[in-house]
Length: 227
Image (tube, rainbow, N blue to C red; front, side, top):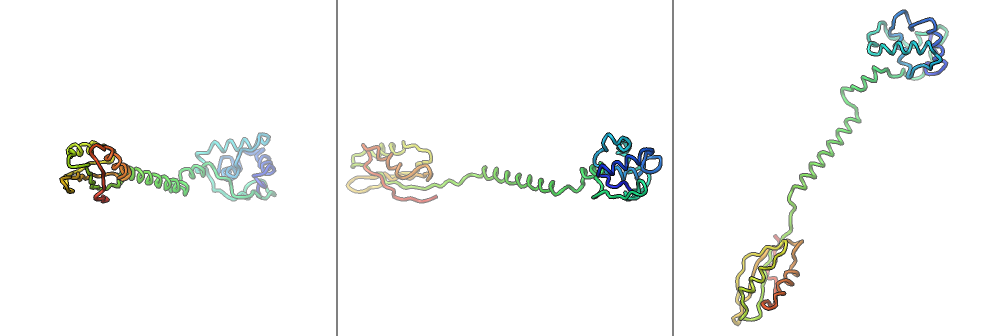
C-alpha cells in the first residue's frame, strides 16, 4: 500500500484517483490517517487534481482539531491503494501545528540567546563609556615660582606686581608673592603661580611679563614642580 512519492506529481495523481470515490483516507470521518497524509504535503495539490484538492482543503479546515481526530498515525505505507509502494522521500513536511510549536519555543533558540548576549554586551559598553565620560579627566598642572627683576632701585615694585597680576590666561592662577633683596637696594618680585601644562607654558609667561618693559628687566623660573 502507498501513494508512491507524494512530493511528486505522480504521487499526487495516485492520491487524486484514490479519493475519486472517497471523502477520507480511511473510513467516513476525518482521522489521524488524513492527518498523516496531509502533513506530508507542503502545498495544496494543483487545481486539475480536484479530488485531492477538495480533500486537502477539507482536512485543512480541521487545523485546530487535528490532534483530537480519532485513530493513530501509521506509516504512509499503510495507507492508499494496494499494489502501490510508498516512496515519499525525506521526512514528512512540518505541520502547521509543529510550526506553531516552534514559534512558542519555551527555552528559546541559540540565535535568541546570541542576540540577547550581544545586546547585553552593547548595553554594558555604553554604560562604561557614559561612566568614563562623566569621570573628571586628570589635568596636568605645575607649580611655578617666578623671579621678576626690576631695572633699578627706583622701580615702583607695587606697580610691577600689579602689572604681573594683570596677566590673565585660561589655566593660570596667581599665588602668593614677596619682595626679595638682591643687592644695592634692589629687590626682586618673587611670585608663585599654578598653570595647566597644556594651556600655559613658561615661554609665554616670560613673553607677557617682560612686555612690561618700563618696569621689568627680566624673568626667571626659580622653581618648577609638577602637581
